[in-house]
Length: 144
Image 1: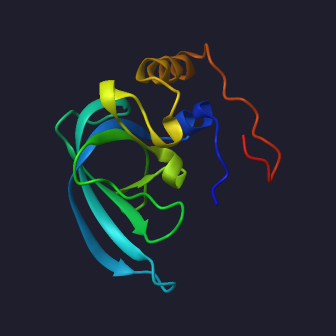
Image 2: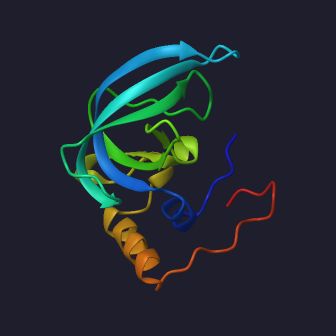
Image 3: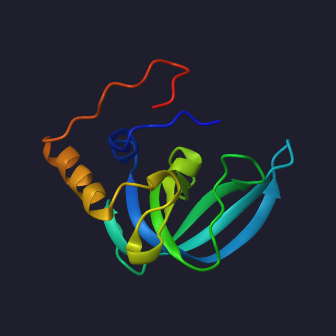
């Protein structure tokens, strides 16, 4: 089980935040524990934080087959909070918390339920210009 981050922590810890949709997903191996290793190619529709252009294709590494794993739907788009890995691919920041599928009127779902895209953009801007601070982390073992 993941430790839930505040939205501010999630944003601050992400190298790239985009709205994207899945183009393809390929199993590239298995971990010693038997989890599927997947390379997902996602197409960027909008950039919220970071240096990438709309239309860019990003390779995002995920593990399949466990409780907090991220699985991208074949249809639809979502908000992705990404960290750059040493091999040049991206990883979803804080697993399932870092993928917010977008529903009707682009309302975030998953762990982004209740946070509008407008509010997310305000948080990104506020952290960048210093008007919003990252709150101190919760004590170990406590979920926010």
